[in-house]
Every structure is written in C-alpha cells, then in structure tokens.
Image 1 (tube, helix red, strand yellow):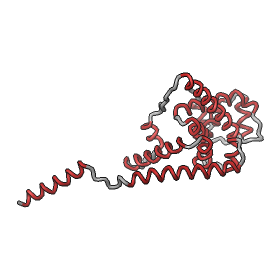
Image 2: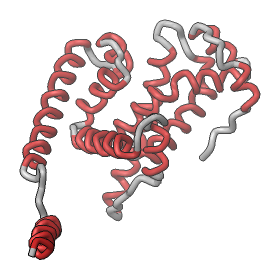
Image 3: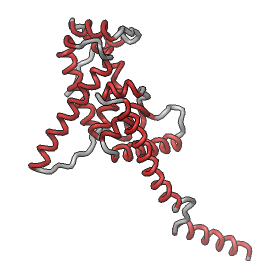
Image 4: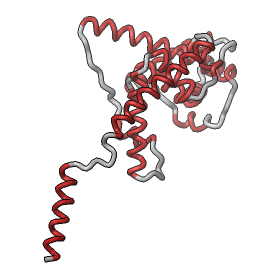
Length: 235
C-alpha cells in the first residue's frame, strides 16, 4: 500500500511549523499539503515506534501507512489535550497490535516465517554519512545491525520504552503519554532495557575477544611460505 504524496505541496510546506491544533484543523478541512507536512514531521519517530513493535522493516512501514490513513480519516476527532505526536503514536501502536493479533491467529493455523523485504544494502547507503570511508561505513552498518538484533530480542515492553527514550530522546513524560503508562513504569523499563542490552552486548564482546588479531590457516601458510622464500633467496 502506498500513500500518495503531492511533491509540490510537500516542498511548499517544508518550512511551515504550525502548532498541533492548527495543523490538525487544516488536515480535517482536507488540506493535503498539511497532511504531508504532518507525515514529514513525525515520520522518523513513528516509524521507529512501529519498527520496535513489529521487528520487521517492511511490516512497520505498512503499519505506519495504515495508521496515517486512519489519522487522516479521524483527525476531526483530535482534541488538543494531548500532543499530536502522542495521538499519532497511539494510532500507530493500535495498528501494530492489531497486526500482531492477526499474525498470531494466522500462525495458529499455519506457522509462517517472515523476513524483511527492505534491501539492507540500500538502507545502509541511506543511513551512512557520505563522507565516511567504505570501511567506516561498513563498520557502522555492522554495529547498527548488531544493536537492532539485540533490540529485537528485548521484550516488547522494554523495547518500546528504549526506542522512545534513547533513540528518539523523548522525555519520561512524553514517553509515558505516548505509551499510556505511568512515568515510574517508563523509568523502570528504561533501566531494565539498558541493563539487558549491556548484558547482551557484553556477551558479544566476550565472544569477539577470542578472535581478535586472528591468525588463520591461510595467514599462517602465507607467512611460512614468505619466510621460506626469503631463506631461499639468501642461499
């Protein structure tokens, strides 16, 4: 499913920063350029929230698109007691949870193993800095992939809090409102998520230490052959 975007309208509204109420009223009145501005403003935060919930790139993008369509249809009911980002976060989570329930029902009938459809090499090119050398870009891609795998392995409750607090850098209050949980719960889950990640990454480091400056068979053979060749030259 694809969301149609008016590129001209998007460019025209790029620098507009309406308050939440104004932006919501424009969208409710059918202003598509305002809708585009809203998506561009919150895309990253909401995608990360969906990705943390569903643990699949393509599924998260589809869920976000569906949530945006739901937002467009229902934004007339938005009340300014909550921030627009919080209201949107609830829609995204509702869509993600609905997908999880549907998937669970399907798995009960016929287990399925899904893989992400996103081209990882293409995503790496987008995320890495243009000035980085190929080695640096590859190293950052490997570190990011490792962190994403470890995050995916966290329980969902901890994973969502970690992404909002550490990745999106929301405050405790903002995170609590987005997830509909007490601030004390945010703090405890954030602490627990960081502890679990540290433990998991420490295990990876311990395993990697055994292979530091590895000297495999081919390397050994090449060195021995080189020494012998030099001995032959000295004869």
